[in-house]
Structure formats: C-alpha cells, structure tokens
Image (cartoon, rainbow, N blue to C red; front, side, top):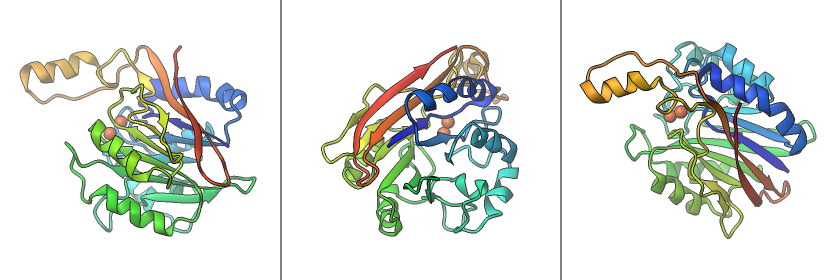
Length: 265
Ligand SMILES: [Fe+2]
Ligand SMILES: [Fe+2]
C-alpha cells in the first residue's frame, strides 16, 4: 500500500503546484491513500469549506491542520456540522487531538478506502514553543486504544524537531508513520525506525519558496527589523510541492520505506 502525505499546502501557489503534480504522482507511484495538511491552504491562513473541497477534489482522503485551523471562522461550523461517526468531507478535516476538551471538530479520522483497506489519521500538535492544551504523548496513547485500523498516519504539527523525533520513537511499531508539519522546511531525515514506523521530522511546505515560510519576504523582514505589527500576505514565487511517499504493508501497517519528494514548476 502506498501513502502520499502532502506537507502544508500554502495559499493558491500551493494549491496550484499540488494540482499540477498530484495526478501523475498518484498514477505513477500507485498511491492508494492521500493526506494533506491544509492549515494554510486559504491564502496562507486557515482553510475554508470551499478550499477543502478543492483539495478533496484533487484526491485527498483526509485533511489535517494545526495552529492556523481556526483562522477562517467558517470552518468552525463546517467541522461541527457532522457527527463523529460521519464519513462526509466535513468529518475528514481534522484538527489536533490535544486541543482543549470540547473544541470544535475531531482529532482523528478512521475510515476505509473503496477497496476495503482500513486506515486512520491522527492529528497532534506539539507543545514546545506552541500553545497547546494537552500533552500529545499520552493523548495519542489513549487514541490508539480506540483505533482498530492497522494503517495509521500521525501528523505531528510542531515546532521542535526533538519533540517530533521523540514522537516517532514513542510510536515505533504502533503506527505506520509519524510525519512532522508546521515549520514549512523539509528535513532530510526520512527513515523507517526498527519496528516499522516511517518518520520525517518535517515534510516541508507545498507553496511559494520565494518567501519566508510562505509569507512575502518584505513583510516578515519588516516585522523582525521594526517589531511593529503588520498584515502578512502569502507570497507567490517559486512554488514547490513537498511530500512524503510511504510504502507499507496494508495488513500489518508496518512501513517498508519513506521517500521525500520535492516537485517544482
Ligand atoms: Fe503551516
Ligand atoms: Fe502551523
């Protein structure tokens, strides 16, 4: 079984570059399951129901998010519009599972592909340098007790590489992959741990690389240079798609390989 995980899709340049490449990638690599991090897909900040639809139309089965999930307020009602047992698109957008109890939406999704292959996707957020309610290591232990699928993908949306690598070792042999998102910078440490969990500290951004992590360079620089608040806008140039391709055994969930992908214009 082949899984494609697309790193933080940033604004329209990110959506465009994913649209350009995903068709042939899925076909040539025999991809069965597609997961995308969508927290920056709407103009760099958040995700709307319409943009989620666009990503589902491109072939995403599940969309994960992170700290920007609520930036576009309309996603809140949308994510709350379905019960936990639903398999509709609104249920297949998830937010970190370790947010405050009672937060809108759901922290994981469990489903099946048309052929019957079951899978689950868990979204978590790190705590180092971030405002996260609950500690993700014990939260994921509790979630794994209720998930029956063997193929399990974890998107740990976190700033610190140490926290993401620690999660990989914590879950080695219990999930198919632990993939880091949020920094928008891909790391070259993709590997399969001894008990069959594929890991990469950060998959990187699918978006404009002529930028500072997706935002217009001048605007971010001005904030660093002056300390003054200012509006951030998504950059446009040098769009690239960053993704990880994981091969695993569909029956056991054990990963056999993880490859980094970086596709440009
Ligand atoms: Fe992001
Ligand atoms: Fe983020």
